[in-house]
Length: 399
Image (cartoon, rainbow, N blue to C red):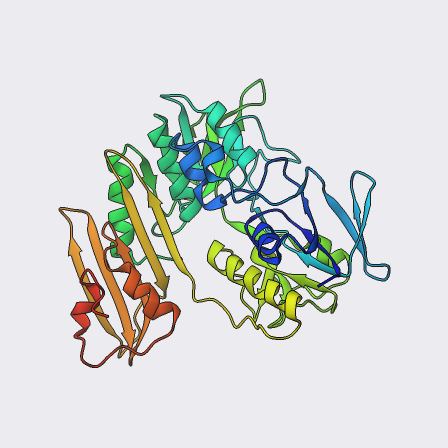
């Protein structure tokens, strides 16, 4: 492998690819952030004060930090950067990740008011860490995985946290109603005030243009000194779209993670494969590994998709939280459902079986059986006839 490979994006996918290609490869990684690559999944642990930023750093790879790619010249195979430099490539890899979704709220203009933060990058995390104090009135807008993580971390720092979720229950994409109810109880036990079916209309600011309240659709105002916008993410596809690559929700790629330009690939949160944008660390790592094989050997590896399992583990001396979810936890007619609940211990386990396959599951509070279930799910393996379904939820998953 003697070609020049340029990777735009120094996050999870880009850093993994550079590492897998090895020291002998001619790889240039262009990273917009000033920070060395880090594990974004653990940002909430940094915000909670449990880890320092250095703890979540990824194994080091050379990155041109703080450099933003502005355009791609496909004809000349050049990447133009905001610092005036140009980088030539034989193969280009877009690992541009995703941006936080900023909802169309009154009070949000071209820039965010003081005290209003997304929660996506290390800079976001550090800004929130500087702003939060014991007793700070904080409102988290969004009750998905990121919003729950942020609310919990701020509560551990002593903030008075309100979590506002527009949907009917927390983490709607991953959890069923029973698991979400237990999660809500867990947050409320930490002092987080949870509002579901709660639509935010806008922000109110004071004379210094700092946020002072979050205004709900019914006119009620939640006092706030700090607001976290955790309303989801959107793939960063602008660079690809401007270069004329095929873009739908993400940058469209084939089984070799190749875009509509044969010399350009895409991996991670920005990539769309078979109509799916995963937006999770597991698929990003798998795509990076497959692409490393493609770039090294040419045609031996293929990416066929990832059956991703969502994990949320937040340690705490007083209120630890472990959660895992995969597939669709909502059964169809004819599906088998196995469910165990222990309200006293705050534990809940549920799997949905269709025919001889796991199609979804939720585990909250006790993940002893998650390893075996994850292997069966990720491998799309047939469940053995000899194992009673109830044993799926024993400590070894019955497998």
